[in-house]
Every structure is written in structure tokens, then in C-alpha cells.
Image 1: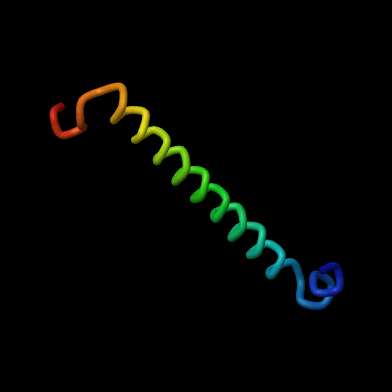
Image 2 (image 1 turned 180 degrees about the horizontal axis):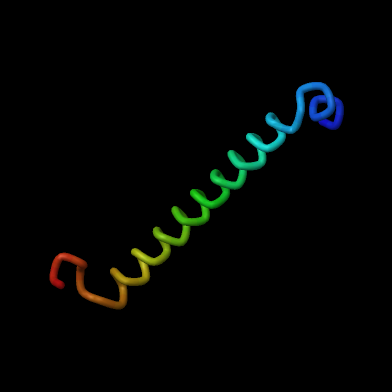
Amino acid sequence: MLWSIKNHGATLDVALRRGGLLLVVAMALTVAGAANVRAQSKAAPPAGSE
């Protein structure tokens, strides 16, 4: 990985880090959202009733 950073500059490394970060954030939001929906559907009436 270090050789690619030195030869091609930091652009690839930055793109990979941003892409990985976005992927992790998207996955975390998806998991949290699914858990939140499940918790709300058990504890409260359906969202359409609001």
C-alpha cells in the first residue's frame, strides 16, 4: 500500500479512506435504522397513525 501512495500520490489512498468511511457510515445507519424501526413497531403504534 505504501508504494502505491508514493508512486501515485495520496489521491487513491484518500479515495479509499473516504469510500470506506462512507460505506461504514451507510452500514451503521442502515443497521441503526432497522433496529429503530423494529423497536418503534413493537413499542408504539404504526408510523402511519401519527
